[in-house]
Image (cartoon, rainbow, N blue to C red; front, side, top):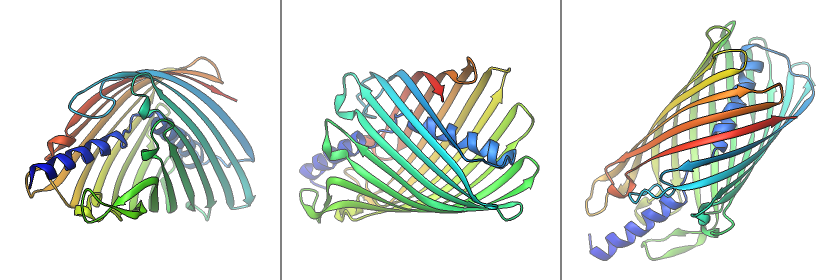
Length: 336
């Protein structure tokens, strides 16, 4: 492999790191909201009534490695999240759910990574006996005000089957098909220096299995595992084509009437189909680890304080993809 080619791969890999930053607290908020719904609607089997709920969350924190690179440069960030949820029973055994989320993330020094995310989810849920059959559409629109190259739309259709195993235990299998459309980022052609006329488009297919249980009134556990593939229209070296496996384990423990302890751990293995390591012909393979521990304190029925610590690490046979980071986040949430 020529030196020029290696330098170009290095530049492209750094650009990929720049726009694959998973630091937003939105994923944490989204998972907590989904688990709250699961515990009320699936585990406790409460029948939903027509209702609209909103919440705002304010976060501030420090990230030790914003660009996920060997340079390890940190920055302070602020984040605002607004969530709106609407549930309506359409018939005796059919419900409609709608979720909307707005996430505004601001970095003080690395302003090109500041972003605005709009997220919408529509879902229909049928309830035959002890089973749940659901499906719908999920849309994410990510916008970088100071760097248009990272903007994208993510469309996803999903279908799932759930069943209650015991009184407070359920399991679910979900099938997903997604399209990730990079609005102003052209797909690579046959060379790393040549782009196609069309925008880069990734097709993602996945299947996920989850098992959740309320062990006792204080302890709730959730296990998830997922397999998915990513197929991009970028031709050069099939740069973004890969298969991935993810394992996820979460725990929610109520310490007292107002204190909650939350922890989760995830592991993802990503195996690229033909993308090779710099200066060699080995296929690239990444192992990504993430662990979070947090405390939530309910001031009252509407207000909640939170403190989280997250550690992430990517172990790869590609030196450019090796990184680790720590993120500390404190937040305030208001429900209305």
